[in-house]
Image 1 (cartoon, rainbow, N blue to C red):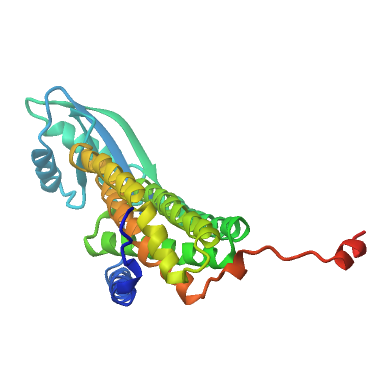
Image 2: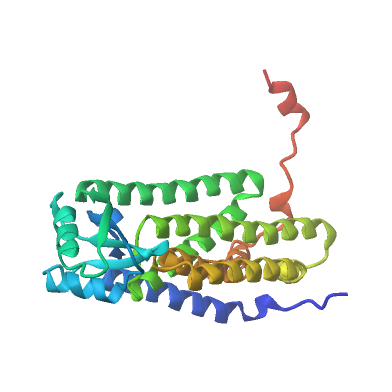
Length: 304
């Protein structure tokens, strides 16, 4: 028989760690802010194709010499393809930057494949809609869990998800990782991943209320978490290995997406044990909470 691990025995220490990390993340967001990408701030994107493999450092130096100090140069797909990102509100900026690069192309000339301009108003709209989408996702999860399980489970899951999002965004803010639409997609994916982990544990807790009738809530949570631990670890480790492959081999374009997912999966695995379950203890979940209300004969007779 699998030995039960006393996860909840260190719940107060875990709460202290959780509180510290959450406050630290919020402090970073407030003081340092987010490093918004061009998707949200507006700017110009230029895709270039060179005849031979391009030197990113050399292209960046060429842009600095031409007066474009804020340009961000990234490899894109093949070694001959580059992406140049520039902040600015001038729709013609992209063509000007492309012309400057073509003039100093030397023995490795480049051709412009596309030039895109995102206005700051569009970027602000994307940012607002992204935040609204995140809130709607959390609201939908709250409603679903309240009906599917019980409102105390719903509160525990939402607190856990909010922690995951705050910690992930806080770390991205601290290291000033560019926050663009791909990173926003990663944050939304984190919500789904963390919720899946939490529901697996919650489902076992609810099931064990029927099996372990004499066990206390803390004993139930320890047993349920231990029973689902191998599944949780297998899922988390396999997911982290896939994300690590993206992180190291996906290039600059997928770096923000990969690092956000990596942080989120770690935070989600932790929160499904030490946040969601602890909230159930705070709310004093009991067997009575899971018993559906009894419909009396009088209530049946009163129905139309």
